[in-house]
Amino acid sequence: MVALREVVAGAMSRLLPTWGELPGIVAVSGGADSVALLMALHNNPTGGLIVAHLNHGLRGAESDADERFVRDLALEWNRPCRVAHVDLAREGCGENLEAAARAARYRWFAEVAAEVEAGWIATGHHADDQAETVLHRLMRGTGLQGLRGIAPIRRDGAVPVLRPLLTVPRKELLEFLGERRQAYRTDSSNADPRFTRNRIRHELLPLMASFNAEVVAALGRTAVQAEEFFLDQQQEGVRLLTLVELEKTDRTNVLDAIRLQTLGEPAIRLICRALWARERWSASAMTFAHWARIAEIALGIHSAADFPGNVHIRRNGGRLEIGVVFGR
Image 1 (tube, rainbow, N blue to C red):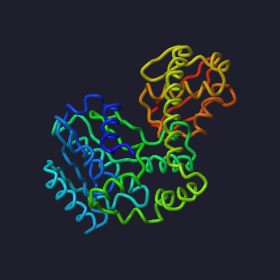
Image 2 (image 1 turned 30 degrees about the vertical axis):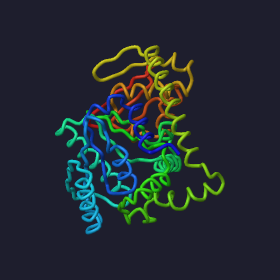
Image 3 (image 1 turned 180 degrees about the vertical axis):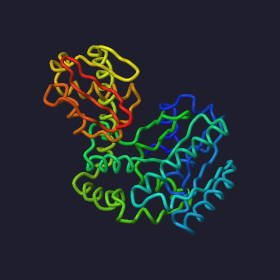
Image 4 (image 1 turned 90 degrees about the horizontal axis):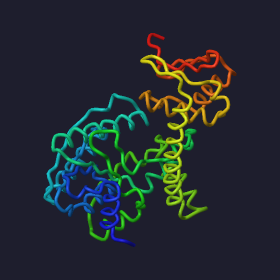
């Protein structure tokens, strides 16, 4: 097995070649994955590392103990440590709360990165996390975009978020820590069967592994291939959009409905996804059924419809008119 430090350094260099020259934020929850990541990155040559921990306060004394552990770990490794608290207890329940906690973490990590002028943020997402994410999204009826799983690098903020452990199974992280007698914290909520992800982790993935011992790696490869294909499709959608767009105003985008008919439904969906991305309309609430309905309007099966985000589409002769309408 290649040494974890070499794996992480190689992944960081592929994701962000200048990472070693820049200070970075390592998100440390206290769990095995983030502790292993911190240890693997400890010798960052010139940039330096800042440990960041957000205490959600969701598990009372256990959350406070996680914070103390991370503070002590940073002190032991002689690293600056930033800690903050956020109260999410009343912001939802179940997986809604989980999503709120995740969003709060990324917001705060970005704030810390801006404050210390860090060039990157690293999180401890590993191969098992990737497999769970792909399965979770598949069960919810995701399309190709969802099968991409967790992105190795996230660039939607001012500072990129890197996931250098995505190809490393959790068992290897535990072996790495065990060989070094390094302690870590265990989140008791990770065993709560009310969370779908926990049932995937403790029930579904072990069952799948009884059929294929390398199922985690197989799902990781699926995510990589889906990412590659998705990017190709994205580029094709942009190319086709330029061919069918008749005009664009502040309020309306007009596409050539006659030409869309010759291209067919799959191409129409690609074009509309490209349009949504270009106009920065949120696609998070758009389902496959929504994209299919747009194609049906373009093909003349329906005349008009409203879509999430106040987007209204209508077929007007040989024109497909698409725009955001406020006040609906």
